[in-house]
Length: 297
Image (cartoon, rainbow, N blue to C red; front, side):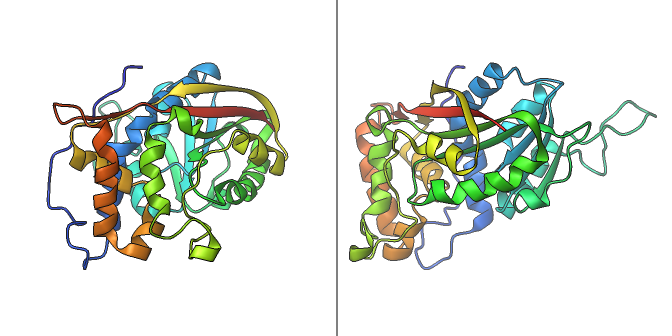
């Protein structure tokens, strides 16, 4: 898949005044319009490997604003997603569910079935799969950026597994080695203001570098059997520095740093860290590698 350079139209920046709270809806839209598509090659590679299609009953854990679900639905899969972020999930509904006032379908015929079923919360909020248990569970939020993220995902997976058929595939994803991910140098900004450990005031959710066995450790905690893995190139490309800063801040990885040092200094640090990746035409380009691990229930 050819990477797409994100072009983002400027509008009033809610981050510009540090005295104003971050608008959750704006940040969710920054994620959906700027950042989420950077992971599209990862979604496509996983779906291609697992031959996702009309026979797939997919459950997405942490579906965000729904791009991965949209790609799966376009391949014919029946998709269900849950997420605790209400703002991102609202955008997923815009993408995936027909307008109640203008239901899709042939003139005079029945309305088309929704392209997805979405629910706020964790696995307990998911409705049963249509046509039988789920045969694919995905956790596309990359592991390996936040201290404690692998420990936090395992219980959610344990709750999701009973929804799946025996032998169903479960896919975990994570950042590749830091030396293969240019964005790792920028993400280190997330750990600076808050410190790098408890003795310096750092928090459990501060940034950390990805480890080689992150995905395997999560699989072991959740009682899953690894059944293959792969690496996918996911370059981050932005039309300008402003779009890059907005996109990266929308990930939430800098929230701890912003709480400790306010948003304005964090934005400046992120922009400074991005400078080496800015091209003469103003675009920003950072090569990255992501991993995925396929497991069996």
